[in-house]
Length: 413
Ligand code: NIG
Ligand code: FE
Image 1 (tube, rainbow, N blue to C red):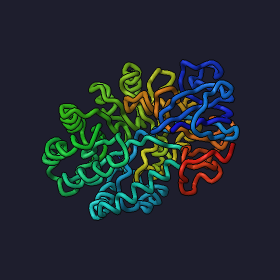
Image 2 (image 1 turned 30 degrees about the vertical axis):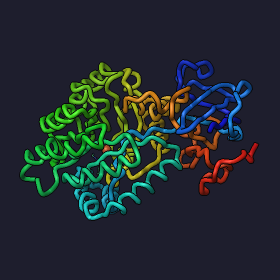
Image 3 (image 1 turned 180 degrees about the horizontal axis):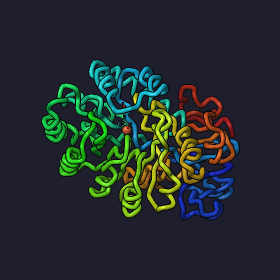
Image 4 (image 1 turned 180 degrees about the vertical axis):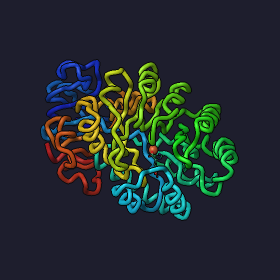
């Protein structure tokens, strides 16, 4: 089954080999464009509408802008419970130190599989309504062999990009036996992870009594690598520290947060461009009242960057990539084009993928439609629900939230 999506006022392909009309911004812009999409989101053709081939169905998006769906490359979606009280306390001055994670661990351990599955499904639906498609999901609120196995198993039901985060914090019952917990993470938990996860991550943060030292982090990451997992790191979130340089030294695919960077960290990330992506999470700075990292300086230094939500109950309970883009433009001094790149091809690179975050023949990004004439409106109109994942099963774009209908003739053409 093929669908010709037409009536695209501005198509940001993100394919820089098509870079004609966008003044070197790397968005591969086409105007009056069309795209043919096949089964499972596969892009079969991209070009000017006048040259479009026939397809089984037609969808006219009425002059709207279309972009590849956002790749949300950092989330913690498998959890139960609520920490709005912790958020309110932070807004009146309490600093974030990772201690609240224990509250979510308790609530998550108490939830049934079906409860967690329903919460996860609701969050994913919320993300799709805001234009995201491929979502990375971390474990990290089980912190026991069964709890971590369950989180990864549930995540694997909905995404290929599952990350084992047994090294999130040391659970309270192991507070005086840290090395025993590291042994559990690198032993039986990692055995369980091999079945479900593609990645391993660790919260490397010497400033938090709850997170892991650089030596503990190295032990966890090296064990993960030996087990065949790719590496990701939560680094330099609460203050300057060794996380970024550990990630670069180990050739991690991504080091995330990068809130507090020294000149040496930026130099290390610049030298690692193309290997280690700095994933910026401005929703976290927003919701923890932290300083924003200087995204402009990172881009100018040639660092590979990505943007993601970090959607989690503690430091950023937002599922919105458009919100993240707007923050990155306003607070990190990225251009709207740089922010869009970071949220699509940049985030895909952090997952070592070139088949998502880009609209080119053979890729499978999912298409995101904007109720706007151009991608720049994502930052220009913050808080306005402009972006949604195009559901090819829904015939009427203006009724995109209604239940999917069976495919039939295109009533809008
Ligand atoms: O990415 N920093 C560590 N982990 C999460 C927060 C988790 C939580 O507070 O529940 C983060 O910010
Ligand atoms: Fe995180």
